[in-house]
Structure formats: C-alpha cells, structure tokens
Amino acid sequence: GYDVHIVASDGFETSVWSDDADRNHDWVVAMLVDDAPLDEKNFPLKFVGAGLEKKQMVGGIAMIKLFVPAAGETSQTDLIEPPTATVDLSDAQFSIIGSVDAVTGFTEESLRAMDVVTITAEHPKSGTADFEGVRLSELFELVGIKSGSTKLLITADDGFSAEVSLAEVKTCTDCLLGFTETPGKFKMVMPGLPSNTWVKGVVSIEVK
Image (cartoon, rainbow, N blue to C red; front, side, top):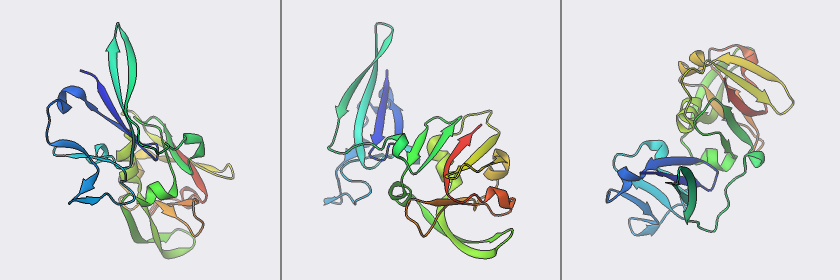
C-alpha cells in the first residue's frame, strides 16, 4: 500500500492508507450535499465517509497526492488539483510548529471555518469578559501532538514569548486561540493560567 494525502486550500494536510481506501464505497470526495453545491468553507470538494476521523474529513480540497514507493524510493503523483492555491506557511497569520505530526498554518478564515465557541472567562488582571475563538484542544487534535512533548512556547508578533506546560493546557477545556477586533490578529485565552500566558498578538505556538 501507500499513503494518500488530502491537502486543503488553507494548507492543512491529512492522509489515509491506500489499502483502507481501496474499493471502500463509504469514502467519497463529494462536490454536492443533498444535491446542492458545498458551502463556501468546503467548496469545491470535501472528503467524507464512515469510519474517518474528524481531522481526516477535509473540506476545500486543493490537491490529492499519492505517495507510491518505487525502487526503494518515494514518488509523488498529483491526482486532483482544483483551481485553488494552498496557503504557504510563511503567509499564515498563525501557525502551530515543532513536535507535531503536521506543521500547520492558519488564516482567520480557515480558523472561523472550524468550531468557533464563545466563553465567559476571568483574566487574572482585567477581570471577567466574553471571548470568542477556537479551542486549543481542537487545534491540537488537528495537527497531532507527538508523544513526549511537554511544553508550549507561545510567541507574539512583537517578539514576546511565554512558555507553559502542555499538561496544564490539555486539562484546560476552555483554553482558546481567541479572535480580536482586528482581522488576522489573535490572542490567547487561558482561564486558570498565569497572566503572562494570555499572550496578545500571538503568531505561533511551538510544541516542545
């Protein structure tokens, strides 16, 4: 067998094993739902099917790649390439890097296509407020945290950085990458954690 990689227009990439996909009529690359075109976040194609993990059901497909071993090496063939461009990591507004299965960049548009929540939380210094964003637990599930990782290094656009225990963040169900009033700018929402972890203008999280 070989790996089949599905790449979304926002740069996210996941994979399935060819033997699992072969003659599997439950897995499809869909262009319609209930005879209607896909919504904007999933257009033009979405990979769906029974038995797939949530992170494998990729919408807005830009490319499907087959990694077929040949003579001891790995070759790569592009199978499907709709007329959409992937987001280069250097152009991303926020990224998760380091000890992950898939180093991934995000834009506000791609983040808002995920499960956005609104919570009420207390900032250690400024008090209680409502915050909107995407749960860190969902982002970490998407990129895949490698075993043995213990820390997160959160970096802001002004160079400020803060380090926090991965174990503490994993137990924080309401920890978010929060949206701000400025499109493309984000902040950390870290209920129950020190104020230095509530980083404003966050541009990356490095898993260590």
